[in-house]
Amino acid sequence: MGGEIPRPNPMFYDRPEKRRGADRAPAPKPKKQAKSVKKPPKPDRARRAKRSEPQKKPSRHLLLKFAALLLAAALLAGGGLYILPVDTFGSHTAYGATQQLPGGCAHVLLIGLDLDAAETSRSDTMMILSVGKGGVKLTSLQRDTGVYIEGYSGLRRLNAAYAYGGEEGLIRTINQNFGFDLSRWATVDYDSFPGIIDALGGVYISGISGDEAAEVNSNMREQLLRKYRAGELGQDEVLEIYYANELKSGGDYTLSGIQALAYSRIRKTDSDYGRTNRQRKLISACVDRLKTFNPVTLIRFFKAVTGGVKTNLTTPELLSLGEKALLAGGVSQTRLPVNGSYTDDGGMFYDVDYKLNRAAFISFVYGKQ
Image (cartoon, rainbow, N blue to C red):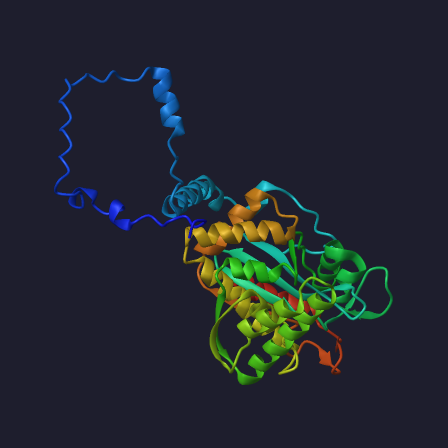
């Protein structure tokens, strides 16, 4: 008992005025003092007092408003770029060009890179984005198209041209075989692609079949296991990401970045025709998503593109082309070579009639032969 500190009686801390003994004289009232006029603090003290007050952080709402104003200013500044042709802002070398395409349209070769079994980058996706008065046109180039590649003998698959000579070698091969004069390109690898889709908040794809959903899951497992073996992801992270994105069945989905990548790589359900069709469908969905003109989404997308896409387009060209694509009409799609213009032996397209395919491309993009 002697060593314990006695606990104070809470009665002394709970409204003590009501718990004073009746025999205790009331405390004398304090004398009223004359009111004194409070002098204003000196200027230097006032400044110090103001600085000592905690500063309020800008709210998320205000930050979003500021971002929207920045985007609006950028769009207004770039408004003049819309009415000018893309060629006004820079020139690029059309490697291997033997003929010229008609004017009035901007063409960009979109290149999607993948690693083969030997860890060599190949252009798994080759798509020409054409923007003009007729709207946005997407033309897939079949990867198994037999082409002649400068410096190599015999026919080779078109997707090997990038492995041999990068963007310049691929554009040279396309121009020499198809009779085009492409000069602009944009390249994205499969590690950067999911981040671009996630920056959009995902893309909506309808009518995914049960077989396609199973292939999406299979391709996601393959991609995640590759990152696990490379030490980029731990086992728990792999399992968490996979089960959060697994498709339970076919249907309509807003695909996340990793799901969209897996969807674009599907090959086993049908053929290369189906694969390129899915890739065009995915790019078209991206354009539709951007056309909502959500300021925050556009800013996130621009940041993801500039960080994950390699291109020879200048900033004015990107602004001009982006405005034209967003303000154009719908997206039309096709592929080359067209039916009836080649022989398919199951592994490569032989005897391609490139003159016929050049005419088909011009008709599709420009609406004339």
